[in-house]
Amino acid sequence: ILDHFLLLLEFDKTAETTQISNQTRIIDDIIEKSPFITVHNKDRSVKIRPKIEYSVEAFDALYAPTHTTGDGNCLYSSLSIIEIGPEELTHSMRLLAVNAVINNSNHSKTICRLLNYSFEEQLKRTATNEQWGGEVQIHALSIALRQPIYSYVEFLDNPKRVHYIPSNISTQD
Image 1: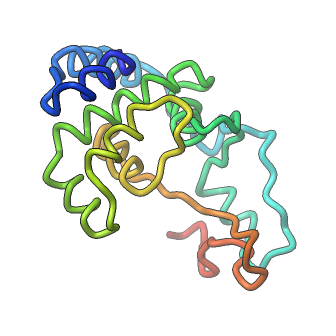
Image 2 (image 1 turned 90 degrees about the vertical axis):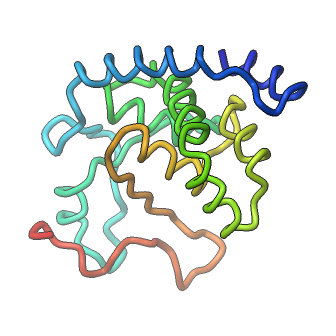
């Protein structure tokens, strides 16, 4: 579906999105019937390194760190894991993001403008397999899944910013 969408987008900037919208409804139904990852059923193989200054226990108690395949689809794969367990819905998550970008184009265009991105390029990036997701895609997926998405990043390029995780995190938040 996404390959067809990208092909149409190359020739016509107003590509037909009915098929994407229809598929999105099916995916929403699957997700709605699946259990969410919680503190009790999260990926136990993911370990946070305890040598940093925040409470690992507090972070681990509130969030569900996931381990994904590092192929450019990690954002979509991690959400598939969180929503249903395995990475089976990776491409479906990407399709949800494309649908959200299209259906919320004013919001997406505003984000793109603020970040100096081309809306068209971000739409293509969202629809292209193995293209990593960034701010635009996180916003789109948050809209599509109707829940906030928090992303914590390890900064290897700056030793003073080893992790971006709030130092005041607690289980009471």
